[in-house]
Length: 502
Image (cartoon, rainbow, N blue to C red; front, side, top):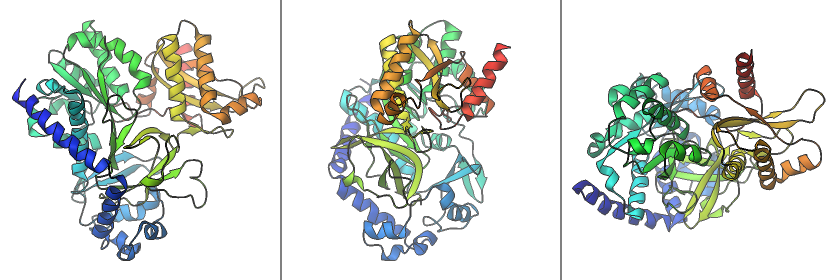
């Protein structure tokens, strides 16, 4: 055992005890965070406008601070981006994480001196919890790759801005710098396909032990490795035994990954976002990720079935239930207040509080009142793959409201298969049955002959990469919407299919 791996084990056990302490006192921990946030921001423009000086309780907070999304908070963000200090948080931000806005171009999410350590520590602690649980620290001596956005940054009124993953690249601790891949030069390549090819060349003969990134883009890396060498990834990297991922669920990709690798490897799920690093998987055999209650973020939750009501009930951590779909609302030491980032979560455990990301409040299908969410289509897909041994590269679902020939409407599943099911009818039947079992609204619409059963449209290999490239979102930081309530994605996929079939 190396000195580095021995030290990692000691540090891991120390951090695990600290985590267990705040996790065992969830409500008290969140109350301390709440009080610190209000006290520190009371003299900011937002704090003055929202009466922070007189907020003594959570009830006071809900009376003074409404739920807002980015567009509704934009008045303050624009002042901050223009260079004004003390707007949402004392002083100026350290960085802006630049993300794609859905209605008005780029969004600028502040990262502050207070919030930045939480992003770094959470990623570190996820790995340390894995070491504390498994005793496996050997991987710290090998090479680690993090597929991420370019670390190069622009500047706006004296504040640097870039992709979150690129900003975080500047904070890799010194003891990991020699182990970290790819090189700085390669990481700065903007074109994703060129970047992946360069990463393949750099890592091909290295002792890779940890690989991290969004599954769909790590999959591309693995495929390029296999195309170049004709070997399984696990054969190329015999000591690779830990995959760290976030952004999308791994399960729909697991079968293909295991085929590309040649064996099963341990995995750690993360829940990072520009707005905060919210959760990470702290136990290998527990479902869900540990919600970070002691990281400068105060959480509120609103049931998704009440979210669009005029005054939906806002809940704190002590009021949530397992298995209910909630919109997650955050107030943070980066200066976001009552902020709806659009994600939905479900609690898998209340002792301690663990969550899964169930989807996006805007990513759903409810063209007929069915309220189908991301978690439901992913679990249906997983069940179908498990039983039929099919493997997929990617998929998305859209409603077909006005089909031809007076047919009933239906949900259309666009699927890129890596390996087709031996019996497509069985695959279809499992998808349909599992979705109906999870969603009573969908079941009732099928039973009532309002909808007909789903239909599958096969996408040729590489089709989803072609789609992402066509919209300028081919790269490690972008991910495909699993489902939509319109046919914007479906129409592009259909047009690409028509062109290929001419």
